[in-house]
Every structure is written in structure tokens, then in C-alpha cells.
Length: 346
Ligand code: MRU
Image (cartoon, rainbow, N blue to C red; front, side, top):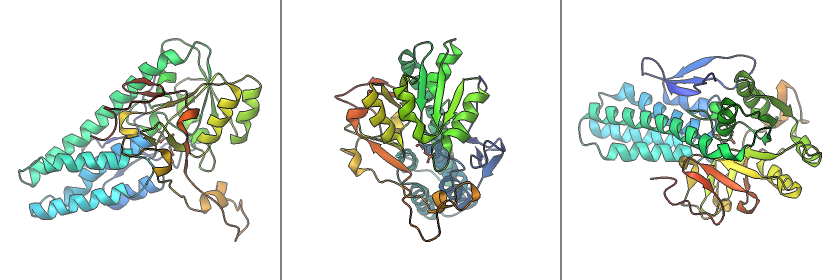
């Protein structure tokens, strides 16, 4: 399997290296982000995207954005650290991985009482740990999810919860990669995932590149395919999971879960520890990011909604826990009644 590294340190260690996902599948281009503006812009435009990947990019980006200020007095550097972390945290509100990563970085800084060099070295180590832990968590999600995928399974997924969305082999796609690697035949159906087409542009790109059979469907086809018996199970990612098991994920996930329940099809969610938010009782407390009108009204570079007509553009929705068959994390397969202790922010 050819590994995609969606987010990592640049070889010189002075930038965040990302694959610019706005260009896929037409063009493969990597970019190096050095300044706070470059980082926040890349996260906001979804050049780097997916809950775990933005957490990792935020952590590495925080360190590199502080390099020009390395000679500032310690108090000024710490003030800037806080200011940069706050700005990065605010770029996208729904995925908890971003505030989770920023809290970890600030907590690490709070434990350092040395000079500026010691502070920046500690932050660099923390960001590297966040990246490496994410890789390891993806792998474990894959291993825990593997028994859910029998040979020949036809899996419906939504958006992109693969290698492009993480520092590793993905979350929802991790069991699919491992099953394929171990010789099982797994066939993936992916919703195109309007309006930004993460399913057709990104999931189809990375799976086909890895040799996993994948077929793209328009978002409105899932119901009839389920009715025709062409879907064995659904496997999706998550941006934030509340203590009661409610799951925020890409807009359209909830609809899929309703359809799966109606057709008696298992609906699985896969997510690393960093996506659990024990501070929230339920999904109603999750802030849903609203995206720009033009992502719908100027789809495909054309006028797709008449000028002056308002649109709704939530990036995510919340699937209630009762529609989720099980949640696969790096700690195991969780079923209701949920006990997520040990998962989430530390
Ligand atoms: O807006 P995006 O592309 O960042 O949304 C991504 C998703 O909804 C993913 O399913 C989720 O972040 C999980 S990624 C492992």
C-alpha cells in the first residue's frame, strides 16, 4: 500500500508540509506553510482538512509560526503563543481535534520553565508526538475495525475519513485498508459529498490509488442502493463525539444513518481518542460550522443558484447516538450504553 502523508513536518523542519486538497484529483501539489496566516488560510479553505489532520497541522503550524519570534523576551513569546493558538483554534469550530491539539500545546508550554529555546523545543516535541500518536491511533482503529468487515463486504462511506484526513491511514478507511491488505475483497461506495465533493475528489482518489475497488455515487442515490441490497454496512468518520455518543460529521451523515436504520444496515463511526469531547453531554451542544454561500451557489465554477437566492451551508450535521451501531476508536469497539472514559482531551 502506498502511504499518503497528508500532513507532516517539512524536511527542514521549518514548515508544515501538506497536500493541497483543493486541487485533487486534477493536480497533486504539496505546499509548505510557514506563517500563521498561511496556516489559518489553508485550514479555512480546506487545503488541509479532516478532523485529525487539522489538529496535527495546527500543532506543527503553531510551532513554525513562532520561529520568527524566537528571540523575543520570554513573556512576549508566551503571549504570542497564546494568541497564535487562539487564532488557529478559531479557524474551524466543529472538529474538536483542533482545540484539543491547541490545549495540549499550551499545557506542554506551561510545564516548561526554561528560556525561549527550551520552550520552542518542547513545543516541537509535542507537535511531533501529536503527529505520531495520530498515525498510531489510525492503525489501531484499523485493527479494531477489521472484524467488522467480512470478505466481500460492500461498504458505503461519506466524505473523506481516509489518509488525506489524518496523519496516518485514516479512520473510517483504516479498517478497509487493512482488510484489503490482508487479502479480503472489500468494495467501497462513496457519496460524492456535496458541496465540496470530498467523497468523489478525495476518497475515490486515495482508494483507487491504493488499489481498493471504489465506486462514486451521487448523494441522492444511497436510499435506492440500500433498498436494492447493494450496501452491507456504512462506515464514516467523525469531527466530534459527545459523551452520549452523538456524532458530528460531514453534512449528509445523519441522512445516511436514518437510511441505514430503515434498511437494517449497520452504521459504524470510526474516530481517534482526540475526536471525543467528554465536556459535551450531547450533540445539540456541538457548534456547526457554516460555510460560504458560494460553495453552493458557485458550484463547479458556475452559477448554480440564482443571484439573490439565499442558501443554507452547514458543513456538518449531528447523528444521534441511537442511529449508530458502534463506534470504533483506537481503544476498541464501543457500543451503547457508552463509556468513553479515558478518551478525549487530557
Ligand atoms: O470539512 P471536512 O472535509 O474537513 O470534513 C471532514 C469530515 O467530515 C470527516 O469525515 C471527519 O473530519 C473525519 S476525518 C478522519
